[in-house]
Image (cartoon, rainbow, N blue to C red; front, side, top):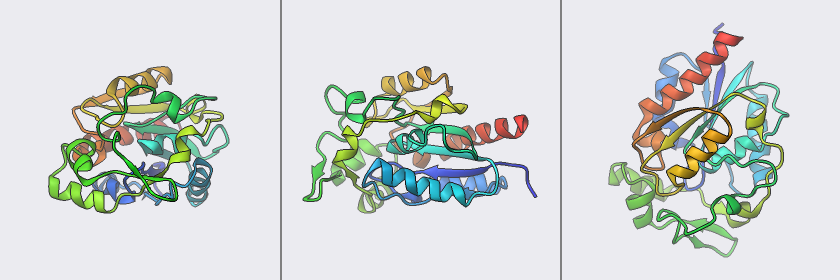
Length: 232
């Protein structure tokens, strides 16, 4: 049996588990057991409950990586996640206790999310033009349109939900900054990474680095997993 940790990948808003496909292929080729579940995006509590269900299925230590809003899902695990060995943030939110995503995103909204449309149930959707030109600007346009078609919208109420205990205060962390991001500003990402004292790398990518730069993204997750193995 391999002593490598398991890896769980948490997608963000306006995406789904398939956004990790390129990263999954690379990690599986290295022999890692990888899971990339789907999240409802109805509330942080619902999404954390879903993550805990998946973590309960993992046999042994697990590295959890979150992209965008997925970073908030993994953050909201708090200290109570016994088999989580490390956290990896990919262009992701990382709130501290008492903070909300709305508070962290003060100021003009970035181009990728400035024009989202909310449906009658309060879920926000991105237009195809904004998705292709801003959200996934360095992804092949045909592939970006497919991503747009399968986007998982985010409940607007999530933005005002106040975070509790932050998991990153209890686990070693890694962070990948997307320097061409037009959804979460790179300077905000650097702030999150610095505050949590994360091992930090940068990639010249749009918001969806796991799609456009799967090699670099897989390498950061692999580095976290190798660090966990070395200290086990």
